[in-house]
Length: 87
Image (cartoon, rainbow, N blue to C red; front, side, top):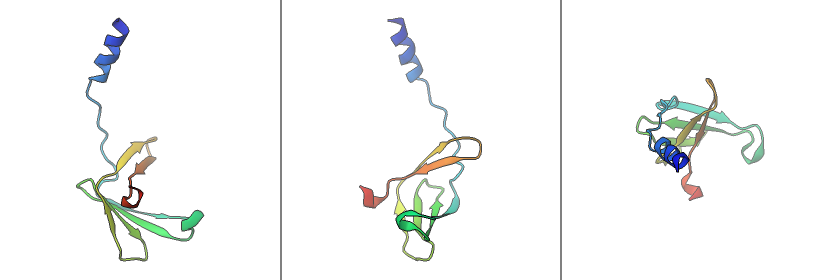
């Protein structure tokens, strides 16, 4: 069918890759409620695509192999990673 051919052709087109705006940066997230209320977590997004994080008042660092970034609008991005404790 013609429609299926169009869908397949579009599916085979290369996806546009967004520049990762967070790579090479460190961000601290403070929590105001929930089980981590009053705590802050520092996340470092390395140039090799890994993410390392720690509680801001701790020296213990956890490193994850990858993360994903999705753009919501010009100034808002969502960042996601699967922590090793969740595997």
